[in-house]
Length: 610
Image: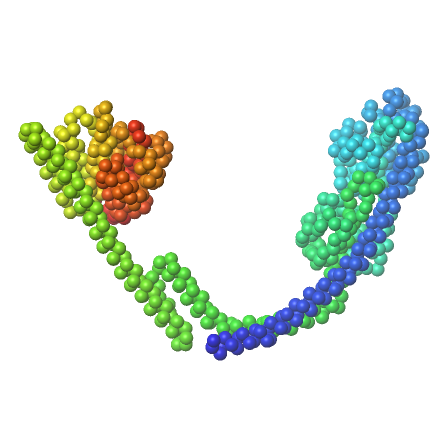
């Protein structure tokens, strides 16, 4: 490790890091203490507010239930009788003397299940018909609770309660003797006591402090500042609160201002169906007070120290780091195969030594790769020549055997014709180029089939189908003839019907597909399993691996159905064109064999894709 690195590490470890840790710990501890102290105070305050809220609701429930059970109130519900205008007026006065005598009460409405409505309220109240009430979802909830009140806060159900600051109670009126359902009571309240409670606990505090009453969805029903009613807290908070806990207090942003937000869920289930919470919001700047100023000084000192460390890094260290990153990028490019790059050193220190060593290493790797590439090309060429040499003697042996058989039968004319066809085949076979036009390969195959037809009369018939557009396309020499020879020598052996060989070529855009199809005896499933094939012509053919074919042939011996030509052709295609091309094979005993050959589409003069 050089002196520069030692100085940098010592500076970071003994100056910058302690200052940063000191400032961070001081800040976090002070924030934690302030937050904990306020959380305890806020919990007590919110619980007190929650108790006052329960008193308000308890009182409203008491008066509502006592009036609801009066004989004169229940006498008109569930009777089925009709009322004239005078009776309705008198009943409205009864509602005023009972339900509206409770000061916070704003309106009261009794609904008979026959659709009659008896309502009364203060100036401006809105009378709701039975049909409108019946369509509200809260109606079904009230019927399910069967007498237990359902409370609706301001702005929760505007269609039912309107836009005013009204708390609405909906409950089923039960017969006080039989407990049968007689009707529905809808009563609205203006709880001015809530604002008084909020103002009492907010007395003497910062003007930005506020208390709110919200529902389970975060809808603000009551705001001590009368600004946020009808809004959702989710749009004001920078993160969510835990509404399932009895009490939760967090430091987060409220309306873009860093604040402490506390939530208390009072126990209101005894007074009806509701799920309300009391929320307090206190700006953090009010809680931190002068502590914030001390923290700012500590932060400024820490920032100056960090700035000094940054300048030290930029002026003395960053140059070396940039060079290291530069070398790393060059190494990544070398990893993906770009061996033409070289590193350039901007100074005469250790970086120049590193650059020269990197360049020397890349040059050495490039030379070794070129040498390996040349060696592999020589190896592939020698292997291809060996495979071609294996096919030629094998083919000549089988053809001369056929000519010998005809000569023994004194078929001189046929021998003469076969010799001429054989000479044509040999001229094609002895061509020096590895690839020949597809039309020439087909001529070679046709002459071979004619020779075999002389020997195996009435044994098979053949059909060659090649489009004119593919006649000039190049193919590896002696590709089709070994495959057809395999069908004749092994596929038609011992059959009691006339064999058929069909060879065709198809244009598939960037590649050519050749098909060799016969109706011979097929290949046994045991051989196919060793070749990694699926039995059955109707199934999808698996990829023919040349090495697997050769191993299976060696295991089965010379009499195996696959013969010698099939693995040789597969090897040649693999070596010449790569793993994207080759042979696919489907076969089943008694159902024949289908061979699919895929080669790249190219003509004379085009670059060799291999």
